[in-house]
Image 1 (cartoon, protein in one colour):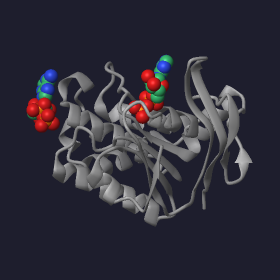
Image 2 (cartoon, rainbow, N blue to C red; image 1 turned 180 degrees about the horizontal axis):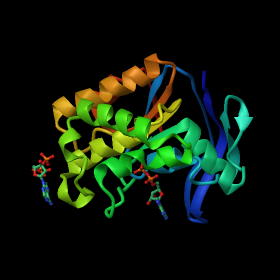
Image 3 (cartoon, rainbow, N blue to C red; image 1 turned 90 degrees about the horizontal axis):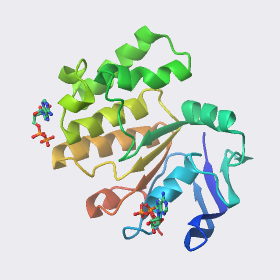
Length: 212
Ligand code: ADP
Ligand code: ADP
């Protein structure tokens, strides 16, 4: 069971661009929490903070009650690889590698053998309808397909915490529905899901909404 907590988070890009101040929230296993707010409200920044990619100016991020926001880079990287799955709009794919290699790349960090990682990758690709694209490079697929590939990559390691930034942004309704079902599956299996979005339909399918 994984619980994610933000405690008094503060962050600023510069003295006059303060994004968060004293922001707290608790995300429990089994939940799909929508973080909403207008463009510029700080949704993406919050996701980077929760995902340990940015270090807060004040406050803490806790995973199962353990403070992790200020750990050294290598420890945060290890936690990211073992606990988190990221579905970010700008989580760009490596243009020089195939779709399959992009998806299995994180398995290397976890020392998962390549063969089972590829089996799981192909299952995920089939579910999202990009299995025929395994040997293509990111430049040869559409934006919507790239987003589905990023989702496969995020879910490969069966992460306990999934952070998704506008995960249905470029997708048609049918594919968005598949993504939403997968997020529900993650939560049902005891995962913790946080979704930053202003898509009313996606918000309606979340179990709780926090407005930024
Ligand atoms: P949202 O995801 O809700 O649109 P963001 O977290 O992207 O919001 O941005 C929050 C605020 O921080 C905005 O005012 C944005 O202009 C600013 N901001 C975002 N990224 C940067 C950056 N790298 N450097 C400076 N300011 C930034
Ligand atoms: P979408 O409906 O997801 O936006 P597109 O209209 O962009 O799809 O793409 C339709 C088909 O053309 C897809 O199968 C995609 O893989 C292929 N395709 C898109 N862009 C390229 C490209 N730059 N090179 C080769 N194939 C592409």
